[in-house]
Length: 285
Image 1 (cartoon, rainbow, N blue to C red):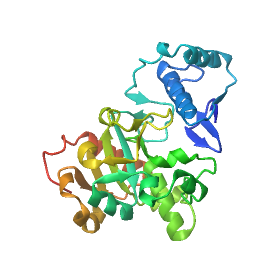
Image 2: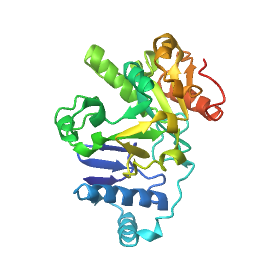
Image 3: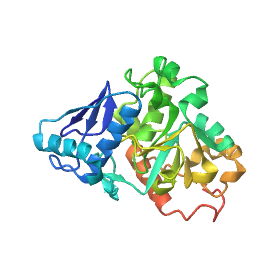
Image 4: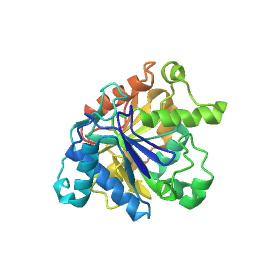
């Protein structure tokens, strides 16, 4: 895998290249170095090498020093806000919560079983089989098999998870990807599942790959880790009957109010931040 460190507009792994933006290029923070080391280690564990590409020699020197002396960054703390990517209303990733999103149809089985499952577990196929026949909107022909063995989580205020859900639904219904106008004027949110970051990183199957905020191998039991589930209110009649009793008090139906992708991500996140600890109330609108 190649890691390109430059003034990228966002963070993405595509076609074998990890575009890695910095919060204040060409300065690189201890947390950004710690994340790069986690990526190198993850790749090494899966028999892949990492090549760094950067025009700034000072940055490359800092990376090489961190690789040689990992103890210098191992205690770097996670900031409350990350500004490497600013494609959201808050102009940065807020790190108290992480989230996952699903389509409305997939939410029925997720809420009924009380579990999020990896693609491998859901489809009953190996990661290699899925990688070879992946038809997801997020499909990258370079995605390795191990990616499909995990449940990937984004930062709690990130709009990308609903963007992916919308992509999958548009491909299924109309055989095309959504336009920017679709995402604002014809946006259809999925179901969002929120977890406290500090809880997720204590999960026995937690993995930090230096790209996702966190991911979990195989399955994530919602009863034990879910903080809040946000469902667009107009799907209440369709989904309410599927909610596992063990999730009572953690599921909320929120009015979309005509919001597009960015507005919905902001509203859902603000609602979750204002939500009391689960278990104090029943599912509500």
